[in-house]
Length: 67
Image 1 (cartoon, one colour):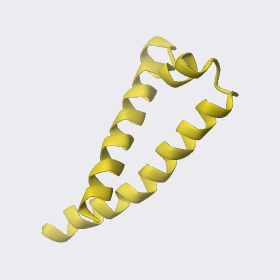
Image 2 (cartoon, rainbow, N blue to C red):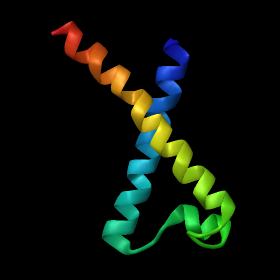
Image 3 (cartoon, helix red, strand yellow):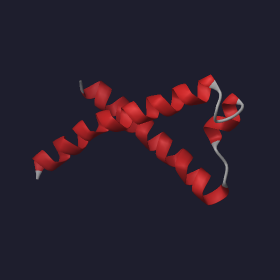
Image 4 (cartoon, rainbow, N blue to C red):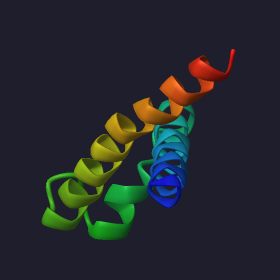
């Protein structure tokens, strides 16, 4: 479970960095790699990042529990 939380956190951070590049530079790395935001590959990556964000809530719960 610890490895899953770590992977989820890393994917969430990478997704956040992609959103930073979208907001700051209007450059979507994922859609650039897969040929557009509407392509199947891009949608799969967006879904993976979304699921990883949900799983990262468990990390947040663990951090809150430590305090």
